[in-house]
Structures are given as structure tokens and as C-alpha cells.
Amino acid sequence: MIYPILFRLVLSKLDPERAHHLGMFAIQFASALRLTKLLPKIKTQSVKAMGLSFESPFGLAAGFDKNAIAVRALGEIGFSHVEVGTVTAIAQAGNEAPRLFRLKRDRALINRMGFNNDGAEVVAKRLAKLRATKQNLPVIGINIGKSRVVDVKDAVADYQTSAKLLAPYADYIAVNVSSPNTPGLRSLQDVSSLRPILQAVLAESLGKPVLVKIAPDLTDEAIIEVAQLAKELQLAGVIGTNTTISREKLVTPAEEVAAMGAGGLSGAPLDKRSLEVLTVLRKNLNPEQVVVSVGGVETSAQMQQRLNAGADLVQGYTGFVYLGPLWARAVTKI
Image 1 (tube, one colour):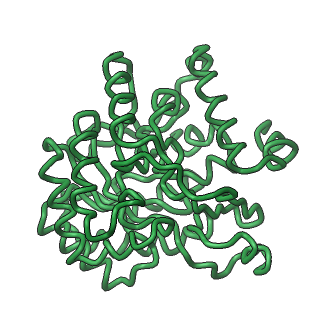
Image 2: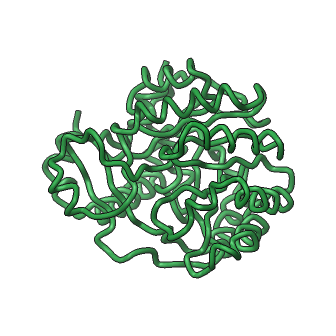
């Protein structure tokens, strides 16, 4: 009950990106003081997927912990897995600010962050140090994307570099070809472009599970083509979905949305389409291949709906912003 009041009175008044950094600091600080250890144990639904054991089906989607600085702390507050990134082979600052916007009436965000991250080499070293502590950690996924300065025609080698550097420290690797905030990136979802990228990542994966993350804006026919490619290459599965470029059926006035500019929309408005994509993927992948369902999940009932529809794992991000640090525990408690 405290967080909604804090959000309304304090955090919502801050620039969204500044509030994000403040939240990250608070989570790390609480973990460092071992305050997260004081949280009572809760019963959750454990899951086995991709040869890995998850304490619950619910994890944190890529985009929150871009640089692997709070993985342990995020696990302690209830996420069974944390997908780090998106990480690129070459460090980059991302797009100019402001680049993150709240649509409070829609419980949504628009972001055009642009894969701001410290680069694969730095993140790899950070994860190596974390792994060396032998601490109890959540499952760690690493989401990799194309470096902005690298031309689309050279994307294969760029993804391969990231995979080679990061695979030793990943429990699984997610190939991001679906963010709307890197020029040309979404064109890589076409199977003719996607195949060599996935083959290159698989070659460097050290046998770790490899998934591909797709956009909700793909047609069902294009989603089926990606699923067929995933079967051909024997990927571990598909993550559906990333953010959307659609602005349909929002409560926020159109002129306010237009003033925010370009970027990917996440949060509650993605619920329906994300569920539709899940259904298409489940019908067109092999039974042993996983579907990680992302987009619009806020409650335990929604998570269960995704599991009932065939998801193996479920992820969230925007709900964290609106519902607070105990959100994952509320979603996963049984």
C-alpha cells in the first residue's frame, strides 16, 4: 500500500529515467544491507524449462538491468530470472534524452533508450565477478542486440562477438532483433536475415539455450515463419514480445502521446496482442521449445492465463514501475 502513495507523490514527479536510476540504487542498497533477506519466504510454483530450474515462472524482462548491476538483488525481491541487457558488442550511450515517458492512465511506458549499455566486454567481466562469488543467483539470461554504429549488413559478426564474450556467464542467450529504437534492427526479423545471425550465435553459445525475441507488430504469418526457423535451427524457443510501435486504443490523449515522439510502447496495452502472439507461437513450435510470454502482465491471474495458453515462462517490466519492488512476489505467490 505504501508504494502507490510514494509513486503518486514522489516518483511520478521525477523524470522517468532519473526515477529508474533511483529505484535501481534503492534495490541495490537494500540488498547490500541485507534488508531483502528480511522478506518472508513465499510459496511459488517452480518450473523446469530449457534444462534450467526456475523458482517461479515469472522473471524480469530485458531493459531494466541493462548492465548486470543488480542481478542478485532483483532475484532477492522475487524474480526467478533476470534478463540482462540489451547488451551490444560496442558500448553505446543510446539516444538523446528525454527518452523514457510514462502514460500513467494506460499503465504504460514509451521508451526510445537505444540500447544504452556498457558493452559486452564490460558486462562479461561484471558477470564473471558475480558468478565467482558463488552466491545464490536467479537464472541469468543475457539479451544481445546490434551495435548502433554497425551496419545492418555486418550484423552477423556483431552479434557473434557479443555471444562469444557473454555466453560463458549466461544461463541462456536472447537474440534481440525487435527493438524499434535501433535503425534497421527490425528488418533482421526477416528469416533470410535472421538465419545467419542465429547460426552465428548458436556457434558461440557453448551449448547454452538460445532464444529469439520478436515484435508484437509482426503479422501472424511472419511469426509462423520465425517459429519455423526456430524449429529448423533447434533454438530453445522464442520470446514474444518486445515493445510495440502501435498507439491504438490508448486512454492518454493522442496529442500527449504524439508529443512524446517515437519509441516502443510497453505495459498494459500490450496484453491482448502479447497473448495472441503466444497462441500463434505455441501452435507452431515443437512441444519441447519454450515460449517466454512478455507484454502487459501485471497480476498473478494474468501470469496464470499465459501459462494456461502455453507459455513456459512469463516476464514483466512495466508493472515494476507502477506496482513497486514487491510486485514480483505478489505475482508469483501461491
